Length: 295
Image 1 (cartoon, rainbow, N blue to C red):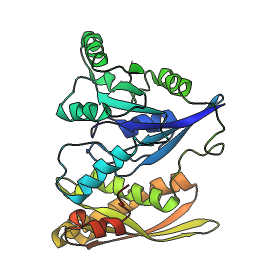
Image 2 (image 1 turned 90 degrees about the horizontal axis):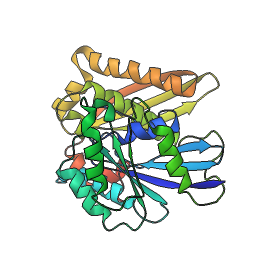
Image 3 (image 1 turned 60 degrees about the vertical axis):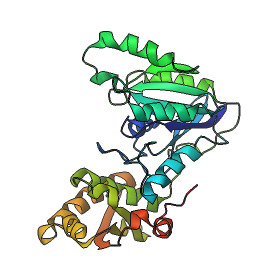
C-alpha cells in the first residue's frame, strides 16, 4: 500500500481543477472559464487498489498581486510546495506558454521535491504535429520526474498520469477513509457551489470581488437547510448580483440548489442574500473573517 500528497500548481486557467476532478472521478473543485476560480487549497483523493494519492489543488500563481486577496492566493499556492508533499505536478496549457508559466518554473527552481510536468488541453491543439516539438522543448527546461501530455476534458492519458503519481508515493497506510474523495467540510463545499454559479453568470470584474459565506446549515432527515450571504465591495455590485426584481439572484439560487441536491442526495432549501463591504479584497482583517487566512 502506498499513499502520499501531490501539489498541483501552475498559472491560472490551465485546467488544474479540471485535472484534479478528472483524476478523482468526481467534482471536488469548482470549475469555470474565468481565471482565479480556485482560491483555497482543495484536497481530492484518488483511490486505487495499490494505494491512495491526495491531490492538493491550488490557486493559480500569477504576477499581478496588488490586492491583499491576490497576495493571499499566491501565498496559498506557494505554501503548498512545502513539507509533506511527495511530488509537485506542474500543469501548463498546450501551445500557450507565457510569462506567468515562466514565473512558476522559476519558483520551482527552489523546490527540492520531484516535479512532474503535465501539458494539459492537448485536445485543443488543431495541428497535432506541433505537439511533439513542444513537449521536447518544455521537457528540456528542467529535470522533470516525468513529462506527460494530457486532456482533463477528454480524459486522455489520465490512467498513465495516475500510474506515474502512484509509483512515486511512499509506502504507508491510506490518509483518508475508503470512499472519501475530499477533505473539505460541508459548509465550505456549499459556499463554493454558490460562488461557482455566480462566477458562471457574472461578467467583468464582479466574480473577483465577491465571496460567499454560509450563515446557517441545518441537516435534517429529508432536507438540508442552507442560508448564505454573498459579499461584494460596492452597492452597485450588490444590485447586479440581485438583478432586476431579484431575477439574477433567483437564477443563481436555482442552479446552486440543484447541484447541492445532487451532491447531498436529498432536498435542499437554499436562501441567498447579498451585502456590500467596502474594499474587503484589500483588507487583511476582512479576508481573515471570510476564511482567507494566509498560510
